[in-house]
Length: 412
Image 1 (cartoon, rainbow, N blue to C red):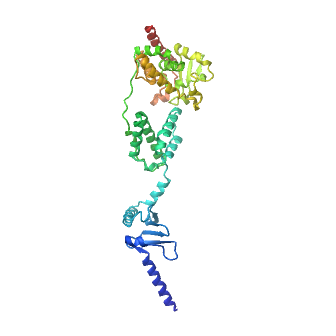
Image 2 (cartoon, one colour; image 1 turned 60 degrees about the horizontal axis):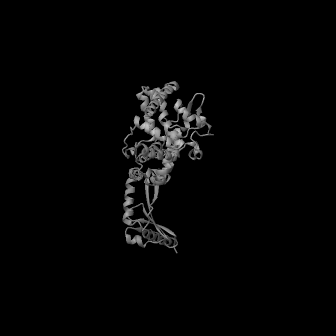
């Protein structure tokens, strides 16, 4: 055959093949199959350049070709035909074309979505990069492991919605833990702020997560003199641990967990001082607490114990000896004391607040009282005032002891 005839024949076949590779109707799309001799053929929309249907032996996949910033992109849709019809594919194609003209890159967004960290990774990053007191870290990890990770851990951070957070909060409130719900949302907010500030995530979806909260009424409960007398006396019926722990909370004004986890090595018998290590304080700062006579009479006989001033299975078996298990015992004891005395609706922390109030009533300067309680001074005073205040704290707690002795003597 003449070469010219061969070329014309080839050209006609190519034109016919190309015409067969075009579609514009649902009927055409439904009838498409790979061309003879091919396992897979790409078919093109007749009027929408860039909208492709990749047809294989088993399935048909939509592909959109577009250009952004001079780069050619191929974006494969997750749904193929017939799950995603022609009209829907054309709609998505038009949307992507508009985005690409405006400089947006849908494929880049998908890649970012794929590589975006999960909420579990955001939480891990927060705990790795944030300095906090050991007690705060322990409690934050507990909240994360209990309420955040089981519900949201596998979710991509950039997919978190306000509705997700509301649902998380409502679920915790529903089990009667409104305060815990607030703490959980606040922890999540801090973790997202940290991830955003360190560019782990591109956007912080909810900088106002804190606003999703149950309104908490600040407690201002302190024990009245009659309540102190009655509860102190009723404590004789409690276990030695509960009796002594609750009395020390009132006498020394320290936090309950710090008191419960008191170690024998923390006590200096010669100076009658209790040094609370930084690893067991909420603030992460060492606090030295003088021990007046009444407090010393409670602690001194217990120094014969091998390790813990308040030995129990709760502080023997737990890492860090935080003494957490005492908490339930304390609640049970308070319930019994309420029945025995008729005075209820008080917490272990109210004993600490009562101690602070007695100090104020007895003329202890506020800054000394705050030192007794182990609060961190703020501002420039916290930087430059390095005085230990041990003498002033001893005087302050002696005044608290004097008031309580007076109340007990009155009851006798």
